[in-house]
Length: 92
Image (cartoon, rainbow, N blue to C red; front, side, top):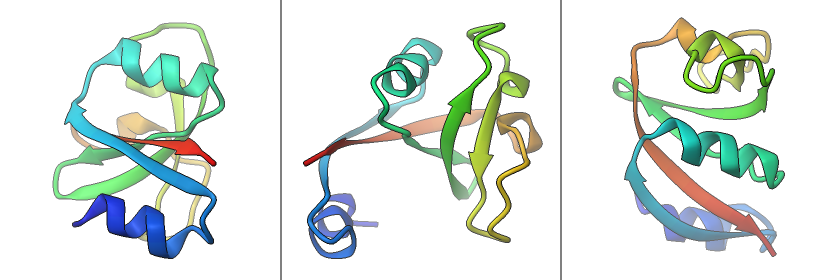
């Protein structure tokens, strides 16, 4: 996936690509606190983490996701395997 191309051509020019890097919990929490929901790779699948409950920083059950496989918003990050990558964007 060419993430910068997705930001430039699929976001109506509302998102800018920052970087793709290894997953770590403080990055996830920091992006959410800035109002910037990250895309996270879980196995061979990507989801958007849109909300953290704030109870436990490194508990995947504490984060809600949008799952493009079925459009659901009720699942939590714990539904899938351990996260491995974060794709970071910013709002233009």
